Image 1 (cartoon, rainbow, N blue to C red):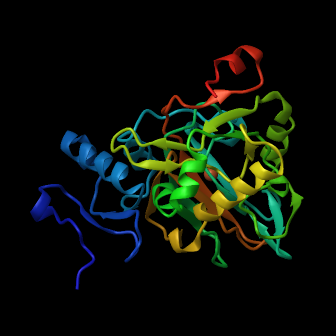
Image 2: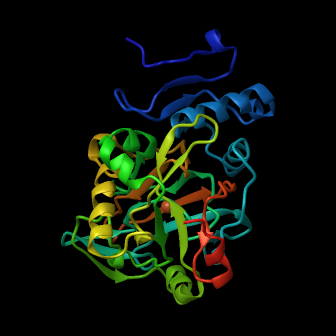
Length: 325
Ligand SMILES: [Fe+2]
């Protein structure tokens, strides 16, 4: 039995494609790709098409910064992250996601200390312009294990909704706010959680939290290339439903989020050296399981730009008038 879906002798392309995990509705694994292969337009197009189709791609490839940046550029222009505190020194196209025993955000989750733990979210959802995606690459893996990255597919999540719920949420919008303290998260966090300390970089970012406007994003949108509906909600950073405040809206969003983070629809990547993982930030959520508090984990991430043009700033009166709700 083989887990190869597409082989070079069939496609004429210099890489194999297999499933991310057997039985999973999304994701793919690509092996055999080199930096030189990315010069080929047919290779870049095939990778883009696969990304649109599958949402998450696990690459086994050269684990260099040059490969990470060149590969990311196959899916869109790279942007510098809005938080300069997170840039990798000397390479502002890369974001440093790190946990050290002496620095890094630390939570207690269900009574257990977890360094670098992150609940389910999509990146930059608290901005009106959400980035298209990113590629993660491990720089230093934790010695004691853990440190996995979870992914769920929001197209599969929409498909799983009962038809009455699909009808109820059509045309609704979710309000988001920039607050890096996951202790304040209102949705998608069943765990008891307590912030023990912020990373130094997060402390200075969050000191500006009230300077960022609240934003709106539609709860459902259609993927441009395929027309497939996407359940567009990031549990972390969500405040509630714009059109339905109060307990009824909270209960509705809680019900919807339950379909997003169904563990049957989740994949947790256990990182190895030589891995890179690309995700479509417009149709997947991700999370981080965290590491032991005396361990170290360093990951570099690219930010692939784009604008699905459906986000709106909420706080300025002129912007509010432009929101078609
Ligand atoms: Fe993230």
